[in-house]
Length: 300
Length: 260
Figure 1: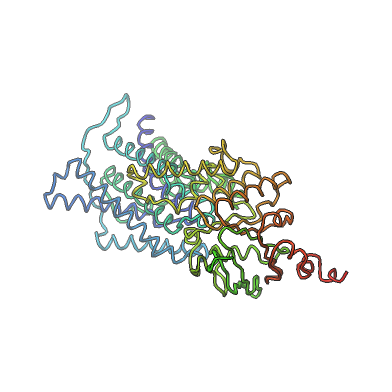
Figure 2: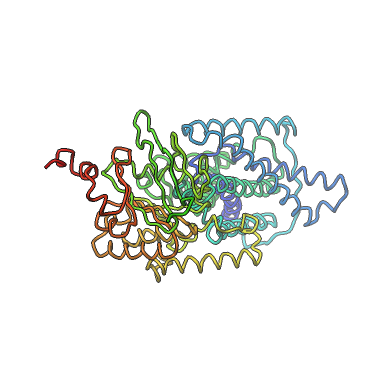
């Protein structure tokens, strides 16, 4: 039982971590909590369904092939990346320099817009998500890792390693870190800050899009509202780890997934969401800088 | 003697902050290879000139010409790309990055690789990054920070942080370097070493516009001095001429001391 809950928790947690990264990266650079980020994740899941549907109706390739899965991921990544960049351009960039509340309200507006758009375009009902991993898995004593769980964890780990390499080994990564530390100075040393912000939204949205596909396959059902709850949970994960810290989002996501799944397993699954939000409240009261965050007073 | 078009020229440069006129109709020029000292009492508007030139705060009126072309409306990163870079009076390093990363980020506008290059890393991008790292190491050696490349910037002692800021500013291959009180907080030995460094920078063919309060230093290395007071230019010329100028003495010591 414990092992199984740990496995479930890590699966869920790695998805939370993927979404939380987008929150934390954007916050790290422009100090905006992008409440529409969960919607990008929801769009990723829908793009998966749309791609799958197109592939099967057009009989282009067998829809249960690995190629179909890869195509779904790639389409979702491209689409979500483009959405994230557009969102920043349209809804946040014009408000840069305005009070901090304005882009926050704009983010809520984008979130409501996207939810309702998808509801109208795709219908309000749950949609079944194709499970390309029927059966398969590894049996352990007292627990079972399904193939989809392995795929989710492996994909998440790969994406996170890729992100670490991007941020620490590349020129654009250096520019992102420099911008996060001192935007004005980054501009002074010749960095096009607008471009760095676009890339940040691009990368965060790509991660969220992948998360959308992963969760869609895991639960098998999606609807237009899944971005809301996932977004708040990922936000909790980002705050738990220390918002603005990339490693914090990863740690926070995994911890949140574990706490939720242990709570659901040992106390009651009905209280699953309560645990997550209780954590958010506790962290905000007792350690608002999060597990890996430095003392906030130092940043000011 | 001087070239027909100066490297940097400000024409009637003015900047208001609300009702306060921080600088008023400043005409200033820097020739290629020249080291110009910008001096004046606190609040004279020296840093404001720097902020206007680098695009950090656009002037209220007047024009800034670089190699004869106006810099009006350019963002700071575009000004840097044209060939002007600066350091700050209060050191502004990227503290959570290593020493060499600070320098490499300074050459950002000179590197071509984009986001696709960063993801797919073709040979050209890898080679470019190696070149930038080699160039950064060269600059660290130039400013005297060899062997400290992999420390965190925040770990460096104060004088080294100043040197690192200069190395970072030089990483964008500027033709004009603006140094805002580089000797601030330095002891006499460090100041002498810094003067030597600024001479070496000039020997590389980089023009320097320098704000400094340590008179011995700025008079020692500047080809020419420009004196500001209350936002206006009150004198200009060689160190000897400026030192003897009654308006300058008045600005520094108070008007009544002129007759004394």
